Figure 1 (spheres, one colour):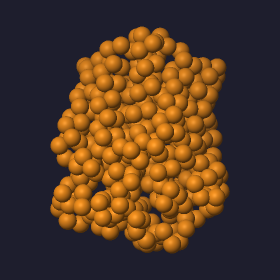
Figure 2 (cartoon, rainbow, N blue to C red):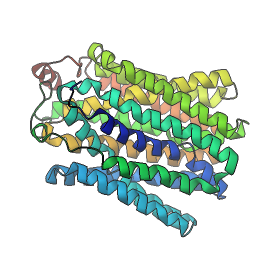
Figure 3 (tube, helix red, strand yellow):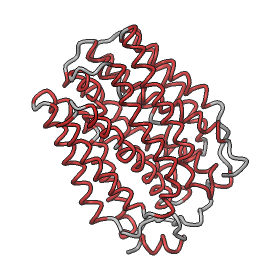
Length: 400
């Protein structure tokens, strides 16, 4: 890694950004349940930020690519995320909470795709070491889910808005510690990156990839929306649930540590497919065997694949299949299609949970991941974007 790389400043931002995800994913549904909303209403409210991921990243990506002011967008997005969430102290009706979800998500989802471009610009030719920065986001997530588990077991969920805003304030402060990206990388092409993906045969793997991203996030719908409530109904304490969320992220961190070596040896197609296969297995086990703590521990360890390896492989896929000047839009597309899948997943989870029950809901999630496996196997080249490929080899693969 370059000695000039601002490692801790970049890592610090990831720490707080994903700490916020750790404050939302396990506890938002629990808080909404505390406020008295039904499973269907909870699913609808949690789907709103996912829907904003379909719109906001591409709007902000277009602005960022046009102005090249990525860091400014990150900082403004962080500030507006915090300010938007303060509206929760005015009211807690369904309509008002829906407005808060729209506003804070619109700005929150402006941040990550542009920050990924900044990070990759700082990494330069060391992009395979991205996971060594990103793992600090997992550390932030893990510490928050453990800490919030103890906190809410002790003081109750009434303090949830204050706790989540403290994490948002950390994002704001860390964004002002991040240096600007190197100016020379924005318009250059990295050695193993194609200059464009305009031809139809070149677009095929991108389309297949985005479909798989959508299905993967769709399959996570019941997990991110109802896991905490589900485990609470199975008589696990909030503290134990916090540790179970943390175990998944700890496994993810371990995956991030070995990911640079994995990327050098394994084509992205096989990393993506393996992640999807393990996702299908994970949701099936979660639906039928979550009452066994030992099985639940194994289920959470699979988070290393269903999020960790899939996300890192996806980031590298975007970097290698989009021209340098389109990196912001490429990352924005990835986040947006993740949002489409996440929103549909949260919506279906809310309605299915209320009408079909937990087991059927998780079985549908497993089937969605299995469908993505078949699509990826048929639609992605087996030689797609191996870490050691040259530009020429990558371009040849794009046109297969």
